[in-house]
Length: 337
Length: 289
Ligand SMILES: Cc1cc2nc3c(=O)[nH]c(=O)nc-3n(C[C@H](O)[C@H](O)[C@H](O)COP(=O)(O)OP(=O)(O)OC[C@H]3O[C@@H](n4cnc5c(N)ncnc54)[C@H](O)[C@@H]3O)c2cc1C
Image 1 (cartoon, each protein chain N blue to C red):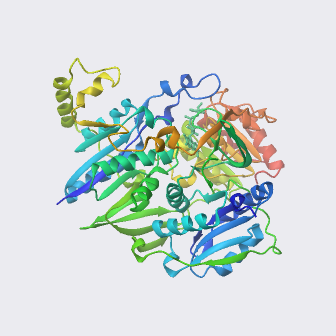
Image 2: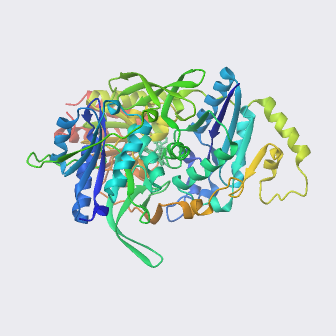
Image 3: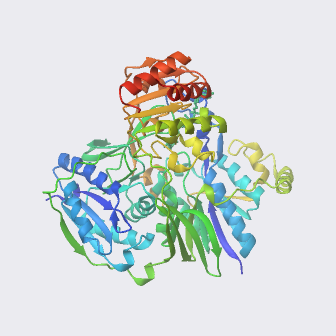
């Protein structure tokens, strides 16, 4: 078997539970491995995770290389990076995928730096294809697709000359397969060969905070962009979300300006949502934003600029001042017959 | 003895203000006309370094890799109280991905010599990758603490910080040396100090000699040349093969402009009746309750 083609997923576990994004990545890895005619593998670290890891099989994982050590029960950079690097060197996968979470974004670049291989952040699509560099054609290369800065531009990134190709993907971007309880995974125990000197981070406290908003699960999202970012309009957007039983989302500059928290951000570097209804208020519709909401079942766009790209995507377009339109919507809903 | 702190800073296009004329006909961005700014979270990293220096004493050295023009952000560092600034600049660094960037910065940091802390912004707004910090830490073989929303305490030979994670936060401690990546919530960056601005401006006037090749560095940039060290590939003893395009494993295969598949779109009149009809329709279809 040609190891070089296997697709490996880093299994993130928090609080002894496998993160949802890891299952989404296994589903994506299954599709890639099928195309490559190879296997789906995983690398997991933690303590007493065996039971939890069995479920990986249901999502298409064939083998998981598992390093169990009490000192790995909580994430720290150097021990995790060294362990993952060692597993990759030993089993030589062709592709390695990480969730673009705080953990994935901490450890993946460290691993890529150690292996001197390419890493593409926040991919919105992954495919298999070929790539030519001068005379050489690289078959079965990972095509890492992500929106590029500005405009309506999507870039396809490849790194065929270094193995493996690595990518991070945000939670919610890849669709999760329906679990198949008949499929099983082989758990391969790996020794923990980390020096005591490598445990450089001392964890003094871990505090869990309930998430204030759950955009991913919301069926209705009212989303505010820079055209709706003044306090009065944000207030109206919030009110509409509330009366409709939905959540408040926003574009990135609204977060960057400190108006709303990051957990409200929709898009390539925020949250990917698929609600029944998405109301884009004063959002221009740049590709990084669309990457996170284009699969909403219905989209209403409110914008004063009739040329705004968001209208090309919307099922219903309302040209006008967003404050004015939101007021009308709230009134219409409250007085619905 | 005080702490030796290194801060990495980047000049980025201002992605928040991409105006109409910055767009080319093919839909790509014309970077040349975009205003450039100090990457926002690098300002937070600088602020944190200055605050730590105020408590513990020491020096703050800022390093930027970029074109000659990037001297602008280093000037901003001096205006805020940095002790030393270094521009890592060479045509051979051009086209670097995050791996090649981290290699060049690692070489520059090694040339600076001893350090206790390296502070980076968590990410740069032109790519949002958050990769360069951890990649430098790996190459220097030192610990890293990422996504820091607060510095809790600076002890004798260690630092305690708050890391924001998905389901809450953690308080973690690392001994020196360590690399930290700082988020926007960590602090409120100070403005440029008017006195420092005057100092460096005045020095500049004396220093600007006509023999200087002004085509290479913008004219007002030479104002502070005596304070900006400029290092090329040889100066940082870097392997040219690992720099710039040749040191970058990731290649852009293609750039595609996305043609929005025009969906069946309906214009709704911006009137009480138009909006009421729309709401009614959505209720009928059970989209909203
Ligand atoms: C690496 C990278 C990652 C990114 N990730 C994301 C991401 O995850 N999510 C995201 O959203 N963006 C992201 N962006 C930013 C993205 O490119 C756009 O800059 C951003 O989505 C624009 O936000 P906006 O539409 O709110 O603001 P703008 O583009 O400024 O648009 C404001 C809109 O409001 C309209 N408007 C103004 N006033 C009114 C009014 N009174 N009534 C009605 N309409 C009005 C205007 O016509 C305009 O269309 C990313 C960018 C980069 C470079």
